[in-house]
Length: 330
Image 1 (cartoon, rainbow, N blue to C red):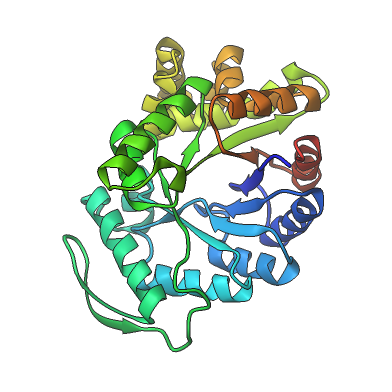
Image 2 (tube, rainbow, N blue to C red):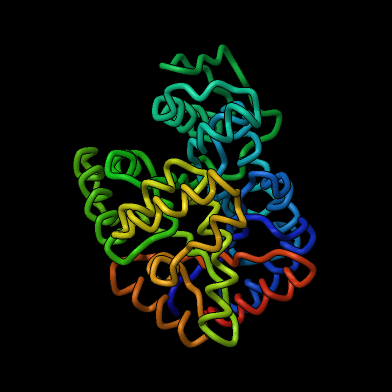
């Protein structure tokens, strides 16, 4: 059976996410991933998913290394790993300056070094049950867990979009997490992850290449694209890093237009100028058949683990998310 994951990035209350993860397990999805942002505490949601399921792997996509302390991340990871009986994956990333500083009041400083320090602290804490660390950005005199971790090693996946971070993921992690991917971006990611792995003296096959793929399913392609348009407008208009990523897909003029519209009129204005071709390049948006064909194309491009990420909102969000899960089920 082909490996397929599912991810939730907002639009659903926590209890509905748990219900969707239970359905995903029934449908044969390999893994379920939960973002955070403003959508609920991801570790609490995953803890609830852990006790409501038996087989599906559970991961963060991603947990920011800025908004929690490194020992707190390690303790949370060990907790969900216990509750899930060893099914947890820790997805880590830096998040974005435009979120970390204004929303959390935390300076966004040396993100790559902080990621390295966090990975080292989490691994030591889970392995030994206690950690002391003196790093470039984080110093921990001593932090110990008051319960024994279930496993001495929890898989860590790293969020990466561009070559330098892709290579760091290849060096440090068990997997890389992409998002808004084109087929060309998948091929580039595989190449740079392999470079990082080789530099670390490990085979590239040890690093899983996974990607969240935003998804909207409808009776027609036009209706599905309209459901996806607000998300593309927000990511291109608000987040500088995603603006760059989407511009590099070959739609730089369109992305510039989206950014200008966002700056003038916010999300609604940005959504109105998102072109169909950009949506088709970076997302699953169409009928169930179209979405399944797109998943196959991503796999052909080298994506080991496509992660279907339903973009839903409103009163019908749970129903829409479940429809997307059924449409894209392995």
